[in-house]
Image 1 (tube, rainbow, N blue to C red):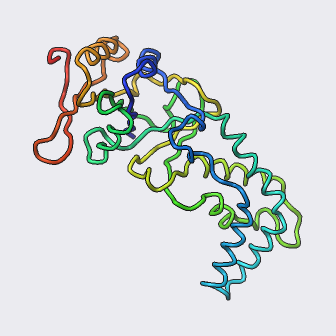
Image 2 (image 1 turned 90 degrees about the vertical axis):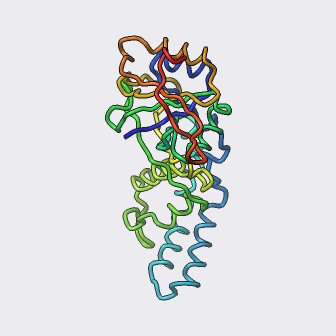
Image 3 (image 1 turned 45 degrees about the vertical axis):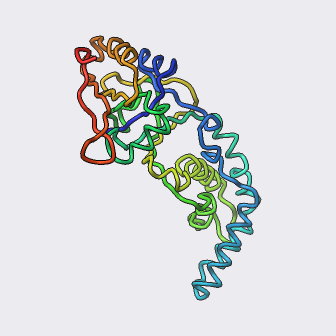
Length: 271
């Protein structure tokens, strides 16, 4: 799969290219303050209230809904612990945000504007799959979901409670552990609807910090419309080593046919 990283031109970008590494950020370092930080206050009560509304409005004959409500009431205290502790678990992980938006397709207009400092940056194209993400660690791979509702409430309502216990049964602690993993997963992979244009693929590492990638996975460097010639030349010379000899370079220009961009091949000879 082709994935893209839109970057400013700064010391972190240069360092990543020199060391062939991605930086996995802590969730608290991300640009969206809601990202990976789902509101959990009174969340089980909210889930019960939503089930009540659903039961009264759409399916009063559905016997499963009252059973789910009673089940949530019974195990409320057990579920609140993994929910409340989610933030403490998530701030320890590292997140790398990549995009499926290529640098010259229509949706890239926002990506260039938001992440490359007004087109003075660049876009790195990687060819990767779940088996060749990194040299050093096993990294989880998730395509983001975009939703305006609280994903943990959705998890509470749709979770298979029959595997955890029923109204008259005992609580399965293994089930609670699995639920905690579900809370972490939906917290990491769900973003609000306005971010949908990013088409994000999110890579998750157990800890934050740099992680080396296979140099063969970097395929193309595309420069923004306002990238200075001196900076372009510096990057092209820096990637002229044998391990990067396969990398292609492109330049974004204004399209004459549409209200958008096109990319053209770029070489040291044309700078």
